[in-house]
Image (cartoon, rainbow, N blue to C red; front, side, top):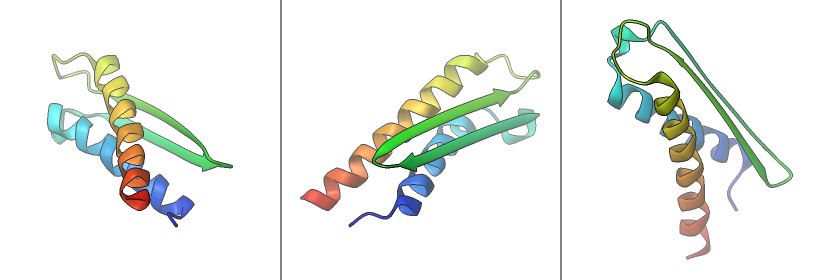
Length: 81
């Protein structure tokens, strides 16, 4: 059985991986990844502030949230296999 904590950690790590694979850490002024998993409901909110980067911060935040959800889906798929 996957614990709630494992779900949250997996999602947060996946989101951070996406952020820092697209923007250098030195270019990120601020970021926030908030993940909750309560009663089987996953909520992921990602904020990225990288004013010195020419990348689309909103797209990166959205992609990071999608990656977080996909990582959790994979976690549950592995458990049920």
